[in-house]
Image 1 (cartoon, rainbow, N blue to C red):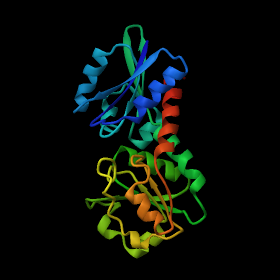
Image 2 (cartoon, rainbow, N blue to C red; image 1 turned 60 degrees about the horizontal axis):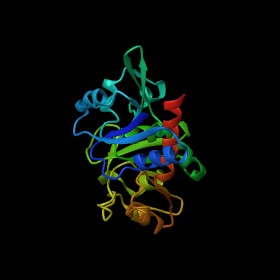
Image 3 (tube, helix red, strand yellow; image 1 turned 180 degrees about the vertical axis):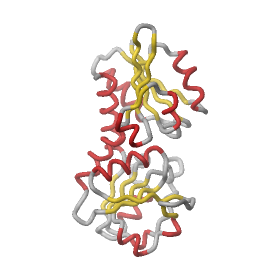
Length: 246
């Protein structure tokens, strides 16, 4: 039996585990998918050692960037992004080779592209972690200019306090790549000036639990188009499966 899994911390409820185990069951695939909740990326080698039948891993917060130094090879696109969310584990002649990929980009671009209109030329990306790097890469691939928004001031990015009416008017796509607003803290939302949101804005939240986050609700109340991250998650899961089996 082949084994696949997810590394991250904390994992809580995992979409991937349910998705893949249901897939294996319904398609009679002799495999299982396991969660590996590791408090440090340094625990990855012991996970591999204890599970010699592992054929592939997904990587989630906070290890999408940290995991790269543990890999033998990184796909060109994942290297350009600087983040990995899929690891293919190849077993050859007693050796184990770890190859890193990024299926977040494909999942995100396919999910957001149908919503983009002529006024959507610039995007604010809330957060600066591994997912936000994939989102930036994907948006720029689709022809949009991007700007990171972070709580800490740094060159080449904006802080939440710097989101003026003019900036909000200029950047009509806003993507939340932070965990702010995720269950069980569904009463929270990213601190952007929602009063400047218009029906020309598109608010995309990578979160999918709850189904409608407060970020999305506050945008929709101003007439904006909104979408959650569930379709992206599904598409990146399909992408993971293709990578493991190609």
